[in-house]
Amino acid sequence: MPENQSRSTRRRPATRKGRPTLTRELIAERALELAGREGFPSVTMRRLAEELGVTVRALYNYVDDRQEVVELATQALMAQWHLPELSAERWEESLRAYCGQMRELYRRHPRALLVGLDESIRPMAVPENRLRNTDALLGLLRGVGLTPLDAFLVHTELALKLFAFSLLIDHVADADRVAPVPQEWLDAQPEIHVPHLVEVMEADRPTPDELFDHIVGTLVLSVRARLPR
Image (cartoon, rainbow, N blue to C red; front, side, top):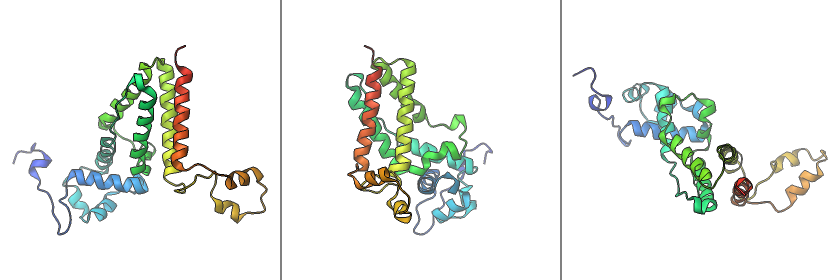
């Protein structure tokens, strides 16, 4: 067999009773699921083999090393990032749809979002969607008349807010109401005088969906404030 024959042609899928056929796609999918729950540091070759019900050696029939697994999982994450139609004539509707789509993606794999902090992705392995979708949003903002600098500022504000919302609200907050601190913190130390915090905790507070709508509304206002007069 020629030495340069590809891995996909010289290796046959490994099957196990009651298990799906092992493929690079399945390895990426399971690595992304694990990273989404526990973060990329939990994605080791041994842990991944356990999740798939195979041996570590079997994994190396399909991937070269852990770095390739991380990059495949990242590409699988970005493959789920599908843009809505973006129109400068309907920029507010487009911006809200863009934010909503990103929220749905982030909610599926929240801890995987920390890949930029936990891992080092080789530049050539950066998923195409990561570049094209960012360009599409900047194009929308430029299309309504924002300067390159203002488009960058709005894009950065959007990224920070949605990233933080996913990790701090959707991932950990109570399903019904959002609170500035967990109630048990106050209950555990009733002697601490924090009247304003108590006042807010006792008042009506927004649901995660209502808070998300508020945050997207601030992004809309940010764009409006930068529109040419």
